[in-house]
Amino acid sequence: MAPSAITPETSPERQYFSKKKAFVSRGPLSRTQSVATIKLNDGNVIPQVALGVYKAPNGQETEDAVTAALDAGYRHIDSAARYANEEACGRAISRWLQKTGTRREDIFICSKLWDADHGYEATFNALCSSLDKFGLDYLDLYLIHSPSDDEEKRLESWRALETAQKLGKVKSIGVSNFGAAHMQNLLEHARVIPAVNQVEVHPFCQREALVELCNKYDIKIEAYSPLARGNKLEDPTINAIAQKYGKTPAQILLNWNAARGNIVLPKSLTASRIQSNLNSFDFTLDSRDIATIDALGSENYVTGSMHKSKD
Ligand SMILES: NC(=O)c1ccc[n+]([C@@H]2O[C@H](COP(=O)([O-])OP(=O)(O)OC[C@H]3O[C@@H](n4cnc5c(N)ncnc54)[C@H](OP(=O)(O)O)[C@@H]3O)[C@@H](O)[C@H]2O)c1
Figure 1 (cartoon, rainbow, N blue to C red):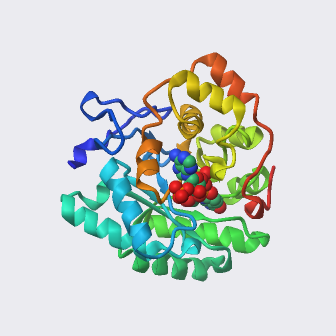
Figure 2 (figure 1 turned 120 degrees about the horizontal axis):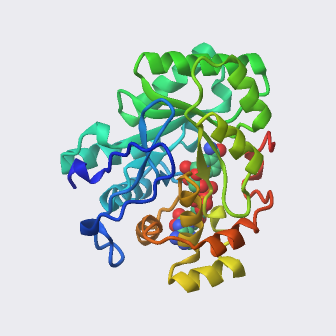
């Protein structure tokens, strides 16, 4: 696919998935599709949908999923040192770039600093190790995976990310699983404001106060577990709305999230789902349906262990 299939985007606000007529998918696995991008507070541009690869093995299954995603039109892969599959992702990416003649800079790769590697030097070592495993010279986005309880170490890690960005080893830097208190603390000490905060967000877990704080600093929300890990696909409200639009429950969940201006990271190792998740953005939920979905939102986390700070 030609690199021009990525739509450069200049507006910093909500960007919906572009419906370039030539690329609109009319059936499963039939066409590639271009995706919307969002401008980050550092001026870089991020594709609004990523393939998440949590719990994807470091082998052929993940290579196939990443290849299927890139073939379908995804241009953003969300991995992490902790997922232990950076090598498989890197192999698939490198093969796909070669096969299609696409430039490295036309895809967006994210990894994350694991908890055991907090601290200034340790962060550099961890970043180098991730780069080696991917076989890349730089990452597009590097995140602190979750906030260390040790404030000094946490801030040292952030300082290392700021330096790595200056050195060109990573284009954008951000955090994950930071609650409001961690965010406030970081903002008091940071030279660079994080570009994103990657947290669990879906209709059943909306994190309104945290989202509001991030909005204030133009820190984009990356919504992880946007399908609530598959646990809410039977929900009657979501199903009724899905029927009304002729969409699947998964597509309603993803559309709702993207319409808020969030970056969404659906994970799947199933080619048909990888494709159908990408086909979630060619319709607009009306305001009454959005209000109905908004009303579902309590703090109903599906990923318990990551939540050191639920504020
Ligand atoms: N920063 C963090 O701490 C953090 C934490 C959690 C997640 N994340 C990121 O966010 C990504 C997504 O989150 P997640 O993996 O927790 O959960 P998720 O994307 O909400 O859900 C993934 C589950 O839904 C299934 N699924 C995918 N598409 C589907 C569809 N169209 N219909 C029915 N089922 C579908 C998948 O199964 P199959 O694979 O079998 O298709 C998988 O079991 C992760 O992969 C990771 O990149 C980050």
